[in-house]
Length: 428
Image (cartoon, rainbow, N blue to C red; front, side, top):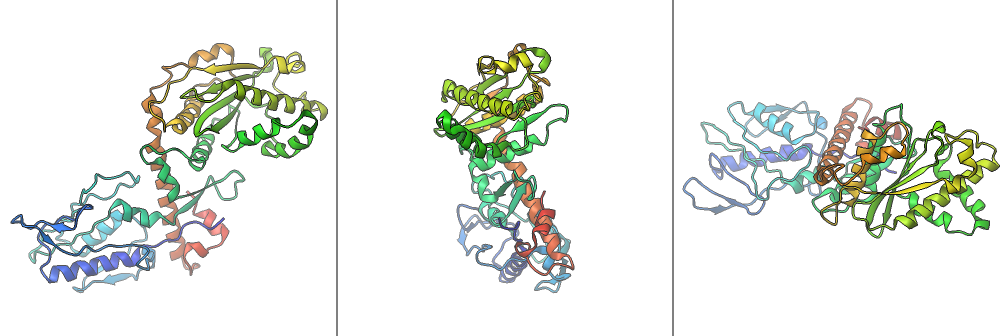
């Protein structure tokens, strides 16, 4: 894997201001002007439109530098200086303009830090009240905003974690309206939720690729399963799943997401494992899912018997001996999605909501917690914005931290060339 984020933004800021002064000197700007995403027109006070060239900043065209690599004081065409900032953000660009021109009154509508979209064609205006009628306009559309983060990359929860998820800004595309969630985003948020679990409750989370491997493993003939499961068992190496209270398995089949929760009872309950299948559209065959999960549990039970470690489980001995007959399966009634693209969000919300409400060990009577009114469908759909905001924030933090690494005395290269240890330190 590559190291985290390359930082690029300094010279664009400098060139933007230089361009502004050239335009101001030629009288091209009025006291208040608007740049819109949909056109290049400027509307003077008399209402007559005049066309002018639009200045763009692009990381593909300009050799951006991290803001911390600017000289201590950057000098502009009028001799004024502006102190460079070490924090990369659009808001800091506006603050630098304010410091350079004390009389300016900045009225800007910047791209939101959570990456959410502004209305199409909505301008960003710097309204300047100056005796010389100078106007300084900085336009940052969402596309330009994406340019700053397009090289950003994080490893969650950390680069040295064997279950870490590598995420770049492009991965957030599926979080746009009506997008279908990818495994990358699903696994990121599952990892995120996993770190919210209280120590008093024991969960095990499999990632989105596990169920496909499970299906392949249990599809082999019984005579071949010992060899197949010897390799497959690496997926939960060192984990006794029969000691866990809950084992969560996301399922992705036929362009649809659903969730299985394996509930392991307490020894005192004298009951077998309970399998729950939660599907927000009812598209997956619960019978097929249950058959595969039961085969998996029985195979693991037989292995533990052979290894003489069956005493170290959270299931009563009497139940353990006849485990295949004591596994209960329940198709859970849950709120249904109102569209065809929110299934991934519903699975993530199933997990989040279950973690909030589930008892330390689930019993049959606890199944009453579910139902069509368990939550409002909009609550699951709203995860789209929440996850996107969370990811954009982490990507921004990664860029900022790498800029600070670049500006440190011991650093002489952009973060893309830093060592692995430096990249780990930049993780949010």
